[in-house]
Image (cartoon, rainbow over all chains, first blue to last red; front, side, top):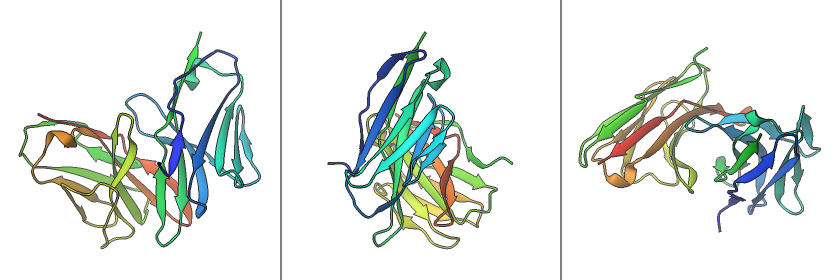
Length: 111
Length: 113
């Protein structure tokens, strides 16, 4: 089992829809959590950090559930430009500082 | 600011050839990383350098060597390329634990024939 797991998708949603992705992590020593966005044939870029209290940035909401060991990303009012792959990332510091990425969830927003 | 730069953007090698991928960052970050990304496998850490003068193996170091030339530059060398090393290679930098975000370069697409 991978330490950080995501549903690869693709999630095909119509414009204007709300879509949510989850990312599960298996190591309870994980301390920091992030969502990155990766466009086709481009590098990953930070979308948002995920805080314990949850955080929102415009149409994007990220939440952390430590008890069940997952983070989520909610996108409201999807735009065509939201089509991309969304990677979750986890930092754990048991022993050494380690940054671990999920394999990504692909989103396609359809006109 | 250029952020993280990588050269070359594309490369085709024959089995057994060697090459060095270059990476530089202008954000004064202490830590630098080399990843490879393959379909269905996600980003896998090859080597990282927590600070100038130190390097450590990541998840998939076999067949690669690295050099942290100075604080700005971190190179990845393939001594004898194999078809299994066909991949997209990303360099990244960051400043943990003060700043946890990783900033990525544009990537190098490598094909080994």
